[in-house]
Amino acid sequence: MDPVTGIMAVSLGISLSACCGFRVFLPLLVVSIAMKAGWIPADSSETWIGTWPAIVSFGIASLLEILAYYIPFIDNVLDTIATPLAIGAGSLLATSFLPVGDWDPMFRWGLGILTGGGIAGTIQLGTSALRLVSTKTTAGTGNSILATGEHLAAGIGSVTALFIPVVMAVICLGLVFFLIYRLLVRSKR
Image 1 (cartoon, one colour):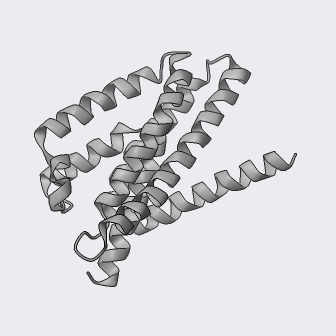
Image 2: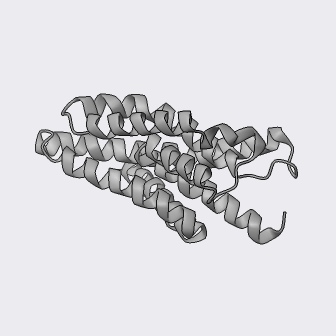
């Protein structure tokens, strides 16, 4: 694999993993459709992502997840459930785009879990904290606006990542570093 293809693949994995931090299933749906349409190549071990059963499953899960975030209190409970799911989905997507033949599977999955899972988990925890603040300050009425922004970030970010993955990876990494910085500043207070 040439360096440019490797950078594009890693950037795509990072970008899509970050989008999993906003919504777990929407980036998986976008990748599933893109693989089925032939826009992105599917590795032999991940071809299941681009099948009709996967598209239908991710589509239903995305719809239910999006609708659930508009129900007060359920959105906060869903954040608790979504955090480990986002880490898993982010790890899967990051690993899916790493080269198979060139790297040892243990290294490939370890790198996918650390980068994809770490990025998705950081963003998910950041949005969960933001939702808790919104719930406390607006009695939950502002959560629907926040949820809409998260849906848009996950959907538009996932589609954009397919076309300009390096730019999206830089934006997503910047967001992760900003969230970590804010957390460190808050913990010092």
